[in-house]
Image (cartoon, rainbow, N blue to C red):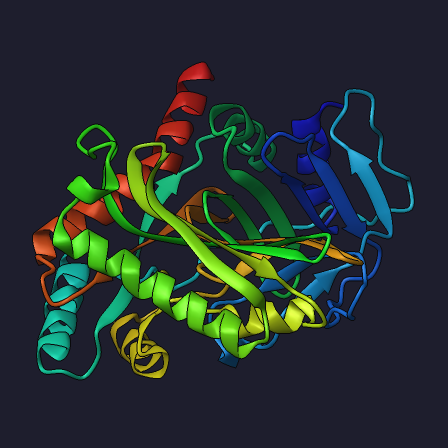
Length: 357
């Protein structure tokens, strides 16, 4: 079977698995025989899943008991289980545009009152699948977004998620660590190529993220940490300000560093505790894996990405999760437009698949 067929069959059989495509590499599937997810161990090869909110539990691990590529001709072993009924939509869809507008107004008031500097608020947007399968969507995203990390994971604990992230939480190679500070958003067709030409609101939003990451790396014992940027990074219908931060990891444990970095102000806010408290009050639906992090790790190597630009898949429809950084200068109507613009990454792919059918 082809790649899309393999993914869809894994889902049909209720397998615990992650399939992912890193930029410039081939897609691969990690399949775990047991349904239960265990915490990762240092140096263990696995696919990490970490929810946004620590109250949803710590990072978990999908072990590669079986590794498969998405080549033509792959066939699953007959030992895999019987078909599984797909989950129905969660009863609480989260904030719509009107609710998001009110939440942004309340957040701006809290920021202007001095209770925090920034908060990232999320909303959800529903879309019918109309015969489009998760496997088809994974392959469409991999073709359309060559510079993004494309991942799809299915577990009993979290359900079925598909994401296309432009943002690394961290990457480790040969004792070198790199972290992305990605914040500030404009429509791609309106964004200047020069980061210095962006507005003060976007530049300060990005600077908050950069300062927090640098501080965390220093506290964690990262040596020679330095930042390069910001530069403009285009990601489908939007563009962001991007600073690349690097250093030498030394004896610092990779998964412990990831836990210290998360959540960065790019997905939570600043100060962290105040921002998360406001998120919990403002968003009626828990984020689960949205704005958490995921990706493959191995001994001496890690590629963990922030799970933004993602959707939660159900039997017949999908729920897109999108967010925007709110500061004292935020205008609620513009923030509503921004999250809907970000959602076009997946909505355009869904539309294209429907038209093909």
